[in-house]
Amino acid sequence: MALVLVKYGINHPVEKLKIENAKEEDSIVLIQDGVYWNLQDLSSLTKANVYILKEDFLARGYKEDEAKYNLIDYDGFVELIEKEEKFIG
Image (cartoon, rainbow, N blue to C red; front, side, top):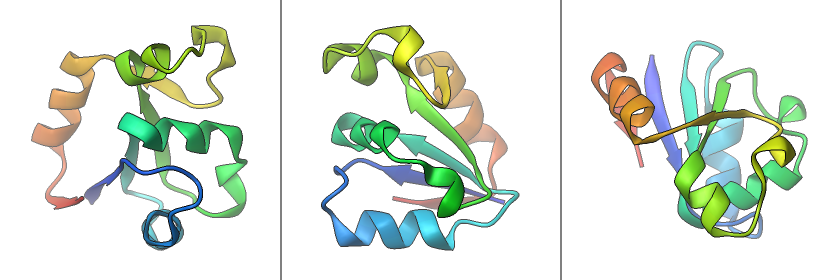
């Protein structure tokens, strides 16, 4: 199991590769400008669990009900970091 951080927007090819290569048991967290991936249907790219860092999402003008994926706060983010065996940033 790995934690995959996506911090750049949808035009960044490396971020797309990270999403596509995440395994079903991995967790993807959209942070910083990576929250713009919320605009995409990631189910066609990955089977991994996708989370959005709530503070970054709201800071970019989104509302909570616009999130297509699970919103997590910083405490939830730290829990994921502690839980996952590997980290891909």
